[in-house]
Image 1 (cartoon, rainbow, N blue to C red):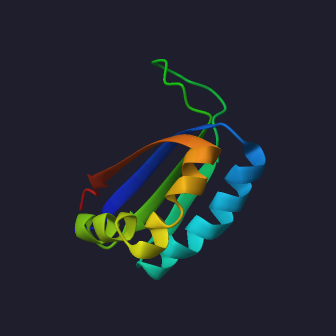
Image 2: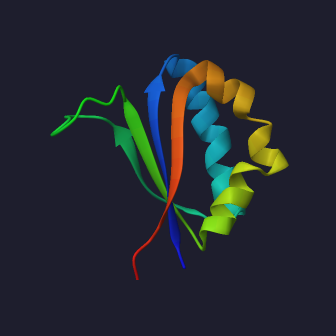
Length: 96
């Protein structure tokens, strides 16, 4: 079953965020993922998350998203990620 990986982030350093994004995107694609959408938060319609940007990626399965996150290629980016942002990542089963 396909799965969506949602990243809700609070950007701490815009330059490092750009560097991280350029490096992380190819790791998603290499793991079979497709970036469905990304952008800066424009408006919160309900609730009060402290988020400045989001990304949605589709993977063939939740296991594929898990394997991407734990891959050596992505794990190597975590120090840069943590300098660039405060991350919140989660995986959803995509409805059929």
